[in-house]
Length: 457
Image (cartoon, rainbow, N blue to C red; front, side):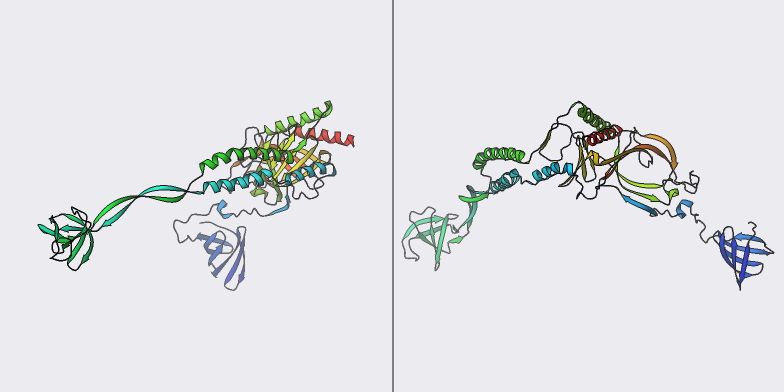
């Protein structure tokens, strides 16, 4: 129950009600109306602007009121000034001073590998030919054969030399004696074997019955089966090893790119500073690179941030990388991989590699910048990061916590180092380190090399 003051405009039986809580409408007679407003449905009774109000409950007794964080839709799409960070196209990226070394690397890379086409491919074909070749071998097998057999059923039977009762009796047989059955002529069985002295004889079919028997017979068969020719393999294996070693050395000589540096005292100091700078960078717990930045109009829903960035962790890095398989150099070349692009920091220039493409830019043609940046860290804060402040996931106009949201954790603000490497021809990379100043020495070394190259010109 409560009291309120409001103004309204009559439109026939309906009224439009305007109050601090919003716009609603009502219908009914004067002094008794039903009011629909953003705060709910009420029954108003009264006059002269003073009313008794009672809220009508929902039909569901267990209805739960929406929490503020459920009722608010957070729109993350309201961004502007979107910028892609990265080196897009290698075409036209190489400067005049770097064209020779880039051309040499690409020319050697394009040479056909003799090991692959003369060694590996034919060798693999020959190996599989040997693996799936067939040889003839003798195999002992057993088979079942049916033997036609005649069994004597009478107590005694006369065996004759002809198929008539007048033929001569040549022997006698007794019950269960067995003979090999040959054929049947009229009422006589032609038999052989058993106790007979002659090759064949006859016995009347009333005295004998045919019951065949099964016997196992062993025999030898020549078959072809897949089997590696071990003798031929024993001969071919050493030969292929010799061929592979020869082709590998040949490829190494044909495709090798050799770069040698001879430093004086001053340039050696510059190079050592560069190496020490990258060693310091690689000791940073986390290193990232940016791929996209944009401004946002919804600072309140982005922990108060004005700029949104897309970053990725740099996991592939080396103090001595090689831009080509057979690249040979007498000094270490610090290497960082940002996405699908590898950055090789030579003593006097930057070489970039993406797949089979290469580009090179002298340090004097690069723009390098470093600065500290406040980063709202939504992930785990690493051990060497410096926390300088805190904010909240959702902030109000004053920068404090927006209390409408129950799930509104405090988020640390870290101070990171941000390094920009760019050129007029299209290089555009941003590297960020969790350790403050991790790449400062490397950037300073590049700037010193830039000054030295300018003096030489």
